Amino acid sequence: MSLIVRTGPQEYECQIGVLSTLNERLISHGYKKVLLIHGEASWRVAQPYLSNFLENGTPSSTLSLFNGECTYAEVDRIALLAQEIGADVIMGVGGGKLCDTVKYAAVKVTGIQSVLIPTLASNCAPWTPLSVMYNEEGVCLGFDIHNEQVSILLINPELIMGSPVKYFTAGIADTLAKWYESDMILSQPEHQANAFLLMARAAALNCRDSIVQSGVQAVSDLRSQLLTPAFIQIVETIIAISGLVGGLGDQFARTTIGHAVHDKITIFPESHDYLHGEKVAYGVMVQLAFEGKWSEIDQLMMFYDELVLPKSLVDLKLGHLTEQQVADFANEIVHDNALVSSGYVVTQEGLCQAMNTLETYIKVKSAV
Image (spheres, rainbow, N blue to C red):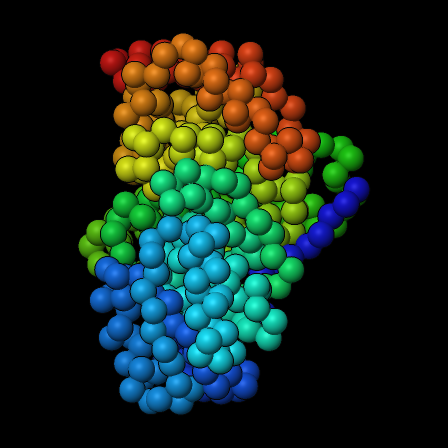
């Protein structure tokens, strides 16, 4: 069995006020020139927390606006800019796609590291040494794994508290998927003797238990702007613990049907109105339908309804798809590279039937 463990950032801290230590941390690592990549809306929220860094001038910094999509062209642009200004570190301040782009740009240039300051808890992108790639139209092309990990990852829960609820609930859905996607593989007898796969499964179970026990409360706390232990726990679960699942389990704990559905559903322009985690949420429903776990679907439906997560193609504005389009969509999912490498066995016929049955099931249940 080939298993490569990539645990996470070299240095990580989640703490109120942690960004006040940014200058000292950069200097202690020997970083002298920073290329700072930032979003637009997220930058307005983040700036007050970075005033000490921006006003200090040591290390010196150059700012550049992210183009909004994690494309190979944007990765190359940032890598080239870093070389032109002589940067030794690229810092990303923003959401998941920005973090993925910054990580990739940093590993493309020898001697450049990455520092990430997420403004959202919408997925595990700040933690993982891989980047999910898209084209300029927002269609997912798959993911690339990197041979270097993030140098420093700093999370200020107060900064995350300024993010939209929609992104947080998407992060909860993406994190919950870690258990449903990985357990079918990790529970197989041949994987029970591998210490790291056992740890990956424990991390996935922790994701599920934390989300089920505290997810709704954390969302309520965000809506009320209450910085509680439950909120901070879910933030770290979304970004760090869920990142550990794939980091410890590699291809055996990274992608099955849930994320494969996300990757392939992006071919439909209507899906671009929905976040990564929202599309994964639907993917989990498809996976459970494929596995015939309807009682589990019943339980998740109530949870999804509380968080306004999509359960069906209709919920994703894709209820108009023809039978042939659904069949073609199922075929694309079955041939997803990451799904194939995971060892999860799925057929087009079985997946197509699961998707169609799920639509009817959700429609009937919603009408009751």
